[in-house]
Image 1: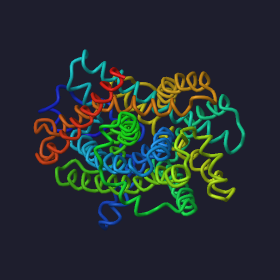
Image 2: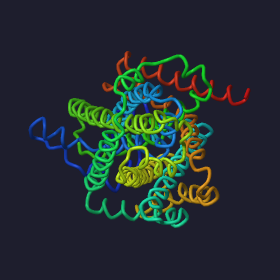
Image 3: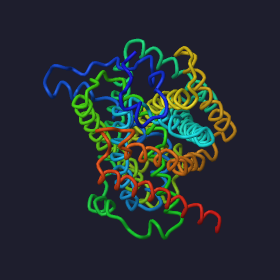
Length: 446
């Protein structure tokens, strides 16, 4: 076990205890001494696991609904969400590298139980909402490609916990390689579909500029918050602050600063790549559905069946199904890891890795399975969108502690966030909270 973090004695009430994801903690070498490019490559990986949040099946539902209903107008929300994510994920890396804690461990240390326990509950709700979206998406993908019933598809998704255990036995880099390979398949599928859809690129560019209608139109705001919740996901903040610590960076301040630089580059590049995929879902919906008068496409199955006649090629729905299945598999892997980080960090549970994985997976997948079986083929789109809005409502309970911790000189030492970065982060946190209040007000007042 590593030497205690010297900053822990100043700003934190207790020693950290067991490391985040202790079975893979500091198992990936950072390439020292070697060239800058080799060290950058050694840190590449966690950002792409975080970027999976951009492409989870819940995001598909909100983007399909937004694109078919409002065309390219909500692309500006995807861009804004991406910029927010870049800032917040950089703070996650900063917290982990400076303090040696993930976000869950930091919350447990910094707050009394009457605060930390509700925060744990909110985090679990967010992960359950995430898993509902991912289980549904994976099950629908299996159904579209192979005709497997949703109920059986849900059971198949539960097996991913064993996939994670197998890959981690080979090394954490294998988990990252699996995620990145599936991201490549998703990018290829959407690239072909966008080419076939032939969108109006002038309208696409215009869609990245904001409009007041997003706030004044309650239906558009609801979908906008869904996109925000699907992009800047609460579990991603816990996930990133844990998996960054799989790198064996040094303990001195210069070494930590170097690690922070490479980790921030990794997450920023990965999130920019993910924006292309995230925007592609909305662009495809706008070009294939809205442009042809199909303004009410919200079901993933309906979108799948419409792509072939609208785009004129039978391969289009197949590519859609393959990309959806890859998204579901990717998202369930990262959500399972986030569930472990949250449970261990908040509750300090010490169990064997496979037992911890099964427990954290069961907590998330059992409610997801029940809801999926209950809804069946009907209403899955509304449920998917609702899960993303729930995620957005939970987001503030993860964002505000993260911003507070990284702005604290006592907790972060020399790696404390600069004032300008903390200022931007607080603006993001307040903006997210304000949009959620507006959403609730519109919901209550009808």
